[in-house]
Image (cartoon, rainbow, N blue to C red):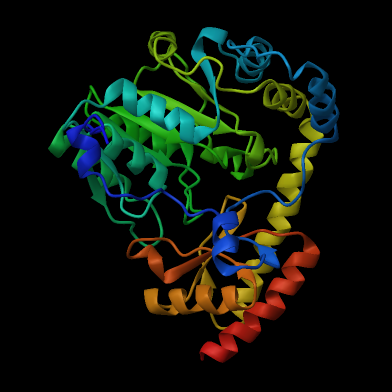
Length: 367
């Protein structure tokens, strides 16, 4: 038997892990399906009827490659955000775009700053390209902007990652606070601003789009409010020189034809997205009320989920297990101090009613 070529030294050092174990994989391990799938922040409200029609019609062309330039979608996005097409790149979801950003800016040993317990796929990419992660803890359920800026200056960070609104807490900062934070970052530091949940955020939490600023890259997705997580499509907005650099290394046929058609149609269906946002707002209120009725608290949320405080990491772990035994899938954030919460995706009204019933049962048994 021939010896295989050696893996790179970096790959040999990396642990055999993935950022998330998906709900489908968990179901295979369990040997049965979840009754309520409320742990992956997927939309339960479906996709735009216009998007459905467009995607169905595009199947007639699925034997062709998708447009590697995503021209029509980028053209529409440029109108929506009042920027040039040259300021936009489309990728197969934010996870793909995070990899593109890290690959473009992080050399071996380069310092990168993020919050401990924040979205783990970013860390996965940084580790995979040999960057050095520096993490600061959440403060009372919020990203600690001052600590992030201080850490970035101290280690001379190439990148700082911030989700606003945040995952896994759901909390957010206003545009003025974000501007002040950007002003405190080192001059050669890039802010990776993950806005996956931006459609659910209040208006004053959204920075005006400034595509000429080379220090900020905005990441958006069609996975959440648009309900297209399985289609894998998102986009980034930043200065044209950075986008041009991405063109040298991105996977040009990585976004499929059906996803492009659906995203374009969904982008044009503003009423649908508005209805989803309203439905999610009611769901967040229901979950907050449920928590209070059981003597618990929850974090304020501008996302499609709510983080419920179980009092301790052990309590959260026990609740995740108790709910799984009752065929309900939720998640627990992975690092202190936010590992005291469980994160519950907003379900349909019927799903929320059923979840409330099961949650009360599980809480009573754990107590």
